[in-house]
Length: 70
Image 1 (cartoon, helix red, strand yellow):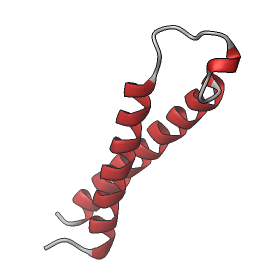
Image 2 (cartoon, helix red, strand yellow):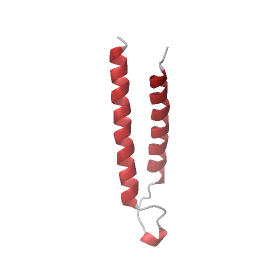
Image 3 (tube, one colour):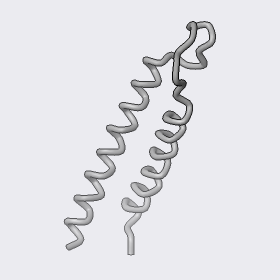
Image 4 (cartoon, one colour):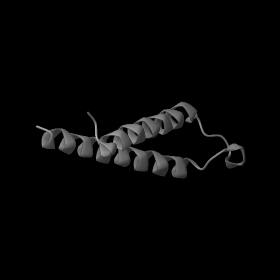
């Protein structure tokens, strides 16, 4: 039986994965002139790094939860 914290982490992980998938799918092969950008590439990289960091934290917490349940 899962705890509310485990359920929250699972849902958060799904959302983070979805955001990362969206970022990866929307990354252009080439950047044209800045006037045509929908988003600043530096901001997109920052957001992706933040999401990957959050994903690592979630995985770490899930690992600790697994160890405590043993």
